[in-house]
Length: 99
Image (cartoon, rainbow, N blue to C red; front, side, top):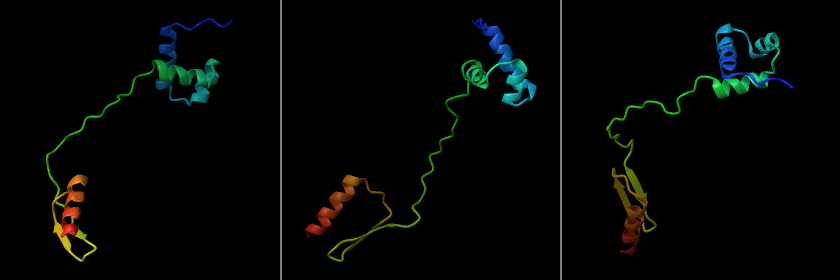
C-alpha cells in the first residue's frame, strides 16, 4: 500500500512542476508518478484561477445603424429609431392593422 503524501509534499510537487520547465510526462517519469496524479494535484492544490474578471461599464447608448421599419399587410409603413419591447411592438401592430 502506498503512503499518502502530505499537503507539503504535494505543494512541493506542484511547485516543482510549475518552475521546472519540463513537460508533464517528463516530470512525472522523473518522479515516478502518474500524469493523472499530477493533474489532480494541479487542479486540487495549484493556484486557483479567478472566476470573475474586472469589467468597465460605460453608459454610452449606441445609435441604431438604421431606423426600425415595419411594413404591414395593408401597405402601411412604420419607421422609427426607437427600440420596441416585444409587448409594445405587438400592441403597435394590432392597433395599426385594426384601422
